[in-house]
Length: 129
Image (cartoon, rainbow, N blue to C red; front, side, top):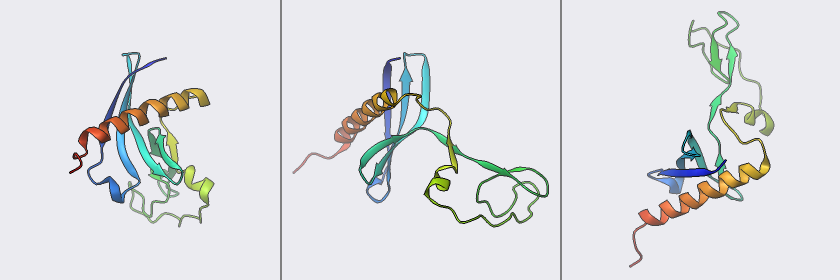
């Protein structure tokens, strides 16, 4: 499946934030994935697929609340304090909404998005004096 368009939306002040841009990726002119993120990691830029925070039920009313919330959004009761989290548990706080199945396709998406990001970044940079 070919990527037919990548649109980049740069953050206004990326120098003090790890999140550099959002991307919208179009596949074969028939399928769109929004909110793909370009993030500055410790080993360079990488692409993160769109995700959402996982939910846990309130012990009192069973309403869903984001993990690590302090109070229930439905009944307002205090939720149990969050347990200490390690690196792997922190990753499980979010779940990808859409993601590639194979490493090769993940690398293909990342290459296309980062190329578009660099192109957009160079377009918007002021010329050197």
